[in-house]
Image 1 (cartoon, rainbow, N blue to C red):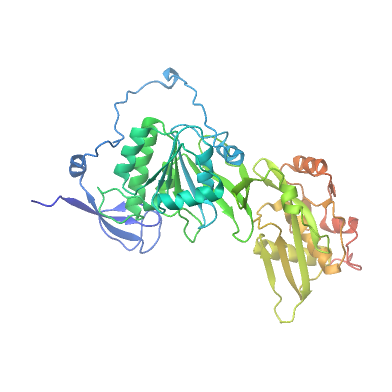
Image 2: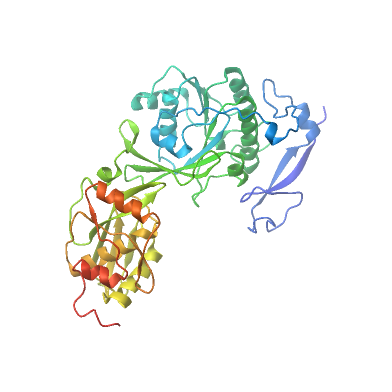
Length: 448
């Protein structure tokens, strides 16, 4: 019996682009030595490979005017977790494909098992990494057992597609896309070709029968979902579950959402019963606060929601010739910039001090609105002066020592006042702000 013919292609590990010949550099993304060889069946051979019970994605369609399209409203389905619905824009859209990524052990499978237990209707949980017995143990620990959750331990996309078509569940969860494989493509699960082709197959199936699908994606060392870049283009929503394994706080972010605002974020806390919604971030982050020199409050915008955070700073004399600068949850380059502004514009010289800055709760902040708070915390720590525990500082600091207004400042100030805290108001210069707080260094009025 003659062997089936196949075509040899070279696929870029970085961007997923295909080439007929090997070359040292990918002409699409510019990366070197990323092309890998794969054998792909010809189109005629693939057509012979009939997938029993599968969805081919080829349906008879007619071109029609957009004005003639019947605007049938799709009713979103609640995930049962308010913070997840918030990030999705109000719930799960029928026929949508959602990609969820995150570091190992951050809680992706835990969150999806909780969602599966709360969604109305039958949920098909497809696992390529765990056995049904392992999923049962986790569901008992989380208290997320439900008769409507059906478990399928499989990795063959043909059998998975057939099961989805037979059951037509309210939601399908595939954990994870890197473990799935299509037998029509002779390559190992997790390869560029397999991830792309299985994702395309599942996406076509979801659109064809209107079943929403959640794909779990592994994370690379660069912090992106493993696989070709086309994977993020195929799906409708891309979510990332972020957090520090040493802290309980988890942040669910959307970097792509065809059905909602990508600026929205969800706040969750890891506990004994899984991930719980954080309805009062200020109480969660500031509940154990101790007021000491170098501690100050500020606000960051998590989507459309202002949230209070504590900034801590510590300065100690350096025992080495080169002082250390360490930042946890804050950009180190930004810290060096603010130290230079403090020295030049406010007369607070920390060139002989080891400097440590920490954002409490394991949060990672990129909002420039905390610049002024970091400067105030550094000055407070250096001069050993304790500030009012109810005080919040907002403002972006420029190289000229000016304190600039920030995005949605009025909304931040309103949130501060509603929670019973106070703010400094608007100060045009960093030197004026420090003087108003009583932490100006004596003799610093002279420009250096």
